[in-house]
Image (tube, rainbow, N blue to C red):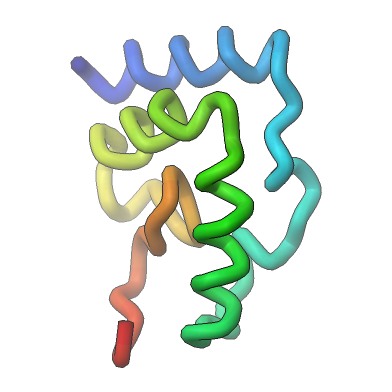
Length: 81
C-alpha cells in the first residue's frame, strides 16, 4: 500500500471515528519515558482504527512522522525502549 492510499484510508476512518488520541498532546510529546510509552500503548490498544493508523505510519516517509502513531514512536529514535 502506498502512503497516499494509507493516508486516504486513515482519513476515511477518521470521518466516522474519533480516536482516543485526538487532541491528546502526549502523542506528539518530546518527553518520552517508559511510563508514557505504556500509557500510549494502552490508549492505542483500545483504538478501533489502530490498524489503519499503523498502516499509514509504516508507509509514510520517516521524516514526515513524529510522535506516537499506530502503537509505536515514530521519528527520532528513543533510547531505552
